[in-house]
Length: 617
Image (cartoon, rainbow, N blue to C red; front, side, top):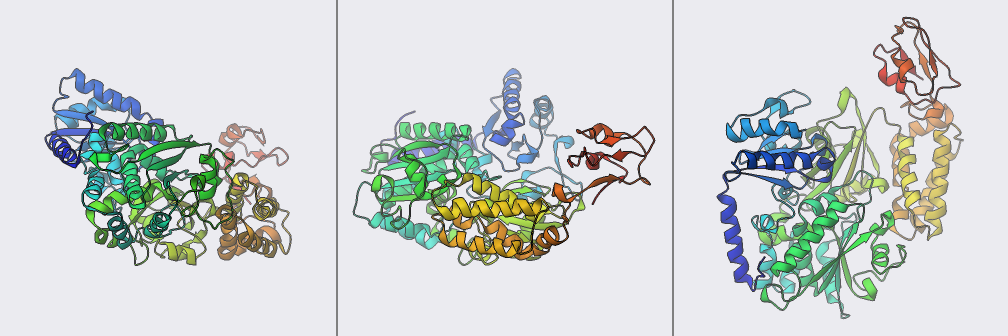
């Protein structure tokens, strides 16, 4: 891999790579993100490579392992270019048929196509799949087209063109002006204007300056940052290089979870490739700008997503927040000015430079520009990663992209913003997704978590679940978070256990207010959000637990009872065989009985009964 001596060399390389891509007759891509790999994607791509080589047609048709395509529940995913024929849940055994029928004969294999969950219509092309139709895939769109371990693939899609452009004809102030006009805000949670943070860091007299990529993604169910690091690591590196140039930094760190081995591997490969080509390291592309990027693997502490705790961890100290100000932009890593942005923020920068500030500012809402990647999970037909313009409503996200709620159930709530976000009720689903509107209803954008809940969800139990996570992840440094959130959790556990008392709701609200006001960092300050929003919008469920000693959603085990409806029981033995506790008794074709003393309330009997003979009260 020859080192590029100057910007002219880079431009020649880009022309060569693009010409090679255009001459490629046909290709098949296999999603090899973590989700698809878990479903056997490595076997699928290996089989494609074997088949193409054995049949000696690999000169005309190429196969490629790519990053995550987003539709994780349907993996392994295979897309045939240039037509973008979309096959889902592909196994290695399906590969010879795909080669014979689709790659050689141009025929579509219907059984591997995606079926619309409502119409049952078979969809042939990827852009027509309901999950992708309403998305605007900008920073995530290249994931399904490039091999993340092949730098030329990234360059072939204008990769590093933005960095070359900046180094050839942009001053630091020029870059800052472009980012400011674009309206880019931090994608890690708070939505702080990116250009303002960059300007503050760049204006400091102290040197050296540092930039950091926060890839410490710890929200339950969130995996957007991981998928970008796995699938398009060079976009993150390029964004960081542009930011470092604008700020005046020559050293950078990517703080990524050690639990993300594939992300770590691909980032390491990308850094080495960029250094070998002269796009990172000393005197990049023959200029006087240099940048060294290091990888720091975090140990999985949720609190290290907070800037000061993350910095402490890089320095080798316990990952604990410190009071602010001073902010990292003034006094950060090793006491020097430090700019920290999220993975999605850094990955947005090259697109803004290449396509212009006005293009980016034209997407989204007045105050929230561009797109946001959400992990859409929970009780929804289509789950996975979605990139949508800011301003799309929650209703559109859940119903049009998510395909609605499975089993004809009703939508009850959506939680945005991770474990510290708020639970938004179904009647507010028409609000646009942006920083200000989510804050108005007690939630937040966060890093992009989006959990959908149906009518069978107990909102008191949801608050208990998310608070249990933040309590476990608290660093314990400050009393309001360590003790206050622990007491909140104790009360919720008591309510779910049937021991709620009059006045508990008011006590929860009072405690939550004190925790929010007194906690040292954002983890503690926002941890009560699930409690406050579930009380605000679902107070009747709390009152039912406390006053009536019942769980309306029939979830809390201490407040429900499983029994057999004699008139409906056929004595099929299904519930008896499914019960792990031996609580069900009865002879074949005779009415069964549940022994309440033995029943663990696991619900297995209810799930297997086909005759509505098991009731939950």
